Image: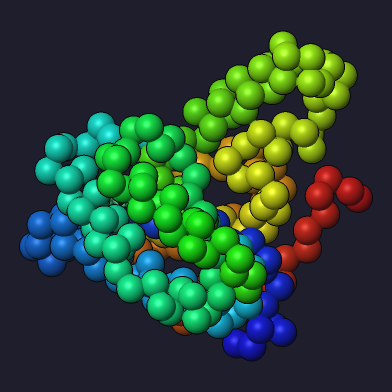
Length: 236
Ligand code: FPP
């Protein structure tokens, strides 16, 4: 598929099924997450090749903190590896990295690295890779309400200034267009507290493929399906 054939500007993905992928092979869940992290790199590369401008990946939800300490440690370990890995390809492909989520829940060294990567890639313009980390959409909305209320309290805005645009700017995703398409892998059909405000008019695709088995080819087939859809945004 060429860049011209792809009509997707912002793709959001719920990467599900790492645990089941490992279980099916008699492997520990951690191996599923490890393979999943490799697929993150492959799909980022594929998205850049397809000319997708924004790719938002759900790497760790606020609810994921409730998993066993072992599993949380594995996921944080993989994340550290990812953050400390070579960013040469990201820079060469002109990719900007952004993180959304509750940073105060994360370890200090991870938060520091995140800020550094965001700064190092801030001027890259071909694609934005947005990683949702310790992310929960309801928490994001509550935090946006607090920021908005603080602006009213300080007198910087009046209540009547609050509209869809202003509120969107208070979210972690400020200045990003809404997702055109949300893909969830592994056959589950839920949104799981992901981008609730931003997906008002998004299309959805639920794939049965487990995330560690997800490929560029699978992505291209989903984009072909998306390209056929008629989006009306509530109009007749
Ligand atoms: C869902 O699988 C996946 C996650 C909870 C985390 C996604 C994380 C990765 C793909 C790897 C790390 C990411 C980066 C950016 C390095 P699950 O464990 O819920 O699978 P299951 O439903 O089959 O148990």
